[in-house]
Image (cartoon, rainbow, N blue to C red):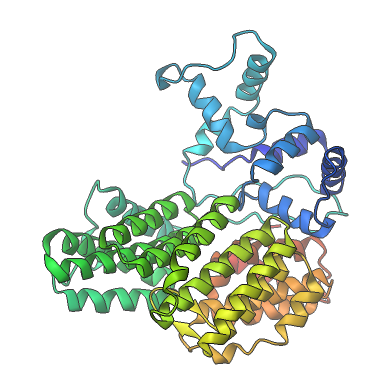
Length: 478
């Protein structure tokens, strides 16, 4: 039976009996020593909530600051660094210890191994298991969500995709393996899978992905000439769809692998637009995995490589704009509002050149998409007033009707804005509207889960009827 994953930072905060407010005060005190001004408290609360909920990992700057503020070595605070320690402690691992036996650091490491014996099991556990909550105080603004474990359908889908991606077995007989080496059939299936994903039908597309990936892999190996180049392009798009679905279903590690496979397939073709589209997906997988610096670097690097070709087609210009917006979201999650809005401004120039929204296998971008993602940037910065101001400028009906995911994500961000303004009834009503539009998007969106938990923590049942029912439907428990 898989164990529940352990969050190292959450454990340390619980041991110190620190509220988010106390934690932020310590971070500010230590940052002030270096004359560094941290983002406003609301943004920091949101950032810490994502850290302790395993939705994001701090970058190197914050890791060093958190270590100083708590007085704990980094391997006691961050699960990926703790994993290295645990691996080094295993005599069969082949990794030599880097500290002297009996030293203070060695004693710290032994204490960690004793105090967090469950961590080694958790690191190998089903990635769909949600992390536990930590003790919080009434004054904390954003609380982490504790979702119920994913069901057998989700686990079966992830396992089937994993078999194909890692090459240790063909998909099961009922996964839809069909179409042979007919490139036209394969092209149609890739487009259908993309539309299912854009419609937030994650379980449905998840069931067809193993067979689609297997056929695309086979076509890229067996076909020749122009058809082989087309097959590699379709393989890259299939990997991108798989990456997005895996991210929604909670397996960020496998999602990164799928996104990297898309990049490799694009490199085989040598098509700059396809490579930029694959980099866009990789950056958007890095974001929820907490690899914010890498997400921004990948997005900006790909945008720079594509910039000399912006006049080649509308898809080139749209993909460039989408990459800039991804970098803007990454900057916002770092708390850098100035850079985030500068990047939004650059993307706005591309949206104006396009004139209307562009949506294809490479990217979705245009004036409406830009307005929607500007709302997201404001939400990431914790600016509820700006969220609601910008939301009034958005006309979601201008998007193609099949782009349900983008419209529902917009509603989730608007709900965050209302929550930041302490208008919980309207926040809940907006979340329910998003659920009616795309039930699976709300069910699998970690930001929606965080928001529901936040609303539950300050619930007034007379003001927010239906909150408990929504919580049960999306698997969030108080």
